[in-house]
Amino acid sequence: MAIALEDIVPFGRSADEYARMFALSAADLDSGIVGIGDGPASFNAEMSALEKAVISVDPLYCFSAEDIETRFHAVADDIIAQVRATPDDWVWSYHRSPEQLKANRLQALNRFTADFAAGKAQGRYRTGELPDLDFPMGRFALALCSHLLFLYSDHLSYDFHIASVHEMLRVADEVRIFPLLTLTGAPSPHLHPLLHHFERAGFEVALASVDYELQKGGNQMLRVSRAASDTRATSSSHPL
Ligand SMILES: C[S@@+](CC[C@H](N)C(=O)[O-])C[C@H]1O[C@@H](n2cnc3c(N)ncnc32)[C@H](O)[C@@H]1O
Image (cartoon, rainbow, N blue to C red; front, side, top):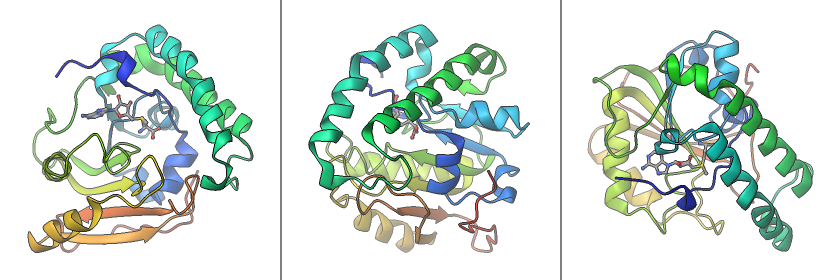
């Protein structure tokens, strides 16, 4: 499916935010991670600098770093204005203010754009999209999906969510998704049906509280695992 840059909000998070959102342990970081819908997050760039193997997949990667940067600057002030207009919907314990939120998103974007050409050449940034991933079965230990599934529940159907999580479980032993709220801050209507679907299908499913909250009430991630004996740590004491 062709994607239009105008449809995308290229706001990306840092490696520290990823570590908190997904309660990533030191063992997780060494395990082989694929980030689905990583967009202009700096997770991959920062992990690469630490010599950790991360592959990011996003339809956005068909565009140039300059195009992505231009799109960021076209939408950033509007988004920050929307945040400012809804003060009760946000928790300012991590980003201290809307202005700092924008500065942090810009810092992530700058780290991403500085790394994009080299990362693309090394195969760390792959153009692709859910619900079909171009990887063999079991290629990764962990698939992370931040601010795509559940968040865009009004745009992405329940069936799309089910197919996407099955596909991530095909390529990775475990899937972690954050947040579980929609863009309006409401619990996603897809969450509980999806949770029951994967429980019934024999997967391990768990909701976990994490050390990150920007959308008020958005401090939980979903873990779905196809390895019944999975013992990887998900301690909230993250290593970054
Ligand atoms: C709000 S951004 C989140 C970026 C990053 N995960 C983060 O949290 O910092 C959502 C990303 O999902 C990507 N996206 C949209 N549709 C997708 C799909 N079908 N499969 C994978 N990624 C998709 C967009 O291009 C965008 O980069």
